[in-house]
Length: 497
Image 1 (cartoon, one colour):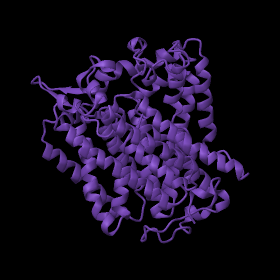
Image 2 (spheres, one colour):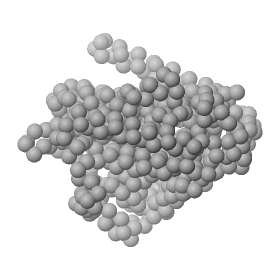
Image 3 (cartoon, helix red, strand yellow):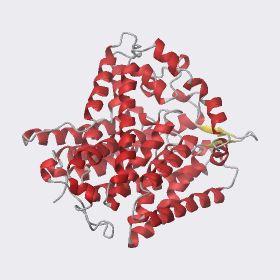
């Protein structure tokens, strides 16, 4: 008993200290970095290691502590808190989600807990929109965000490779959560997260450091544009470090057996190339793309042509993509029109998705198809919620397309292209799944939306940020940081002097 409770008690104390630090620390950039490391390295592993779905409440506590502390300090400073650009859409979506708690068609899931769980799966990471807007105001912050994203994904790629070498029985020994998923027990009865080969053998579909199969590939897909950006602006030892980081990301994708991860990675890299194409570093960008592609190709070659990922990659080749989609997601995608007509007001939050699965209730999910993000939204928050969320996504994509290419500062432009590019991948993947409900896509979506709303709308009023005059040395000196006037910062402690 003592040996089991000892590490748990120490972990609980350390977590409480982290929560207190996030609430009180005035440097929001540092506490956001701590949150990013927790989400990227610990959140999924701890959930599966302990087997408790409630462990994910830890990330909610951290987000609440960070946002609550920042808001409290802003209110006591008596400085105005202007609504960020696109903030109206975010608040409208949040209001719709809260109203949907009272939808009379919402199933009763263990009293009010079902409603809270339903709200959580929609709004758990929304505070990151406002924090991203308030904090990420220098090139230095953008580069640090990129490095955290890439390092976490690379480490997850190594873990994913290790898991791919294990049998399901061996991976099940990692913890109760792993056991349920790979052996198909408990909440996952009859739905084990494994791959079935034609010869009758069963193989692991790695989790990486996430809480579900393919999570490592998803993290790598979001990080690929940031890695390509690092290959361009990094110098010295940091540039040398991009090689092992690229191998880690390639391992994550190549061992995952995830088509979604492959699609997001391909679309994200293509979007990055287009958004950053006019950069004065165009030649270096092309070289970076070629080097990154070489690492991915090399890893696939080393793993061999018979891996689960290689076989799944063949099904999304240009000549087979439409057929594969029709066979596996066509029936679900075809229901969006039916659901709009049948449930224009939705069924209420917690009707489908992870919130319902937490309570072991799958009957409603069996009757309704919530595989695509759009089906999920219409069932949960109705036509109004779907329209507002879609307006937010399309606004971000349009702003990225029309404004990033016009930024004169090449380094700032490169960093923003790396942040915006995965949005296109997530949008494309929303037609086959709802990846944005969990980690890492959920926090990435809301945080990056806040960052882009600042740089592509708010900072546009400061001509120096768009002329390159703020940071004229960034093209040759990655240690410098452009910064907007302090008067524009609602949380001045977020940006170091």
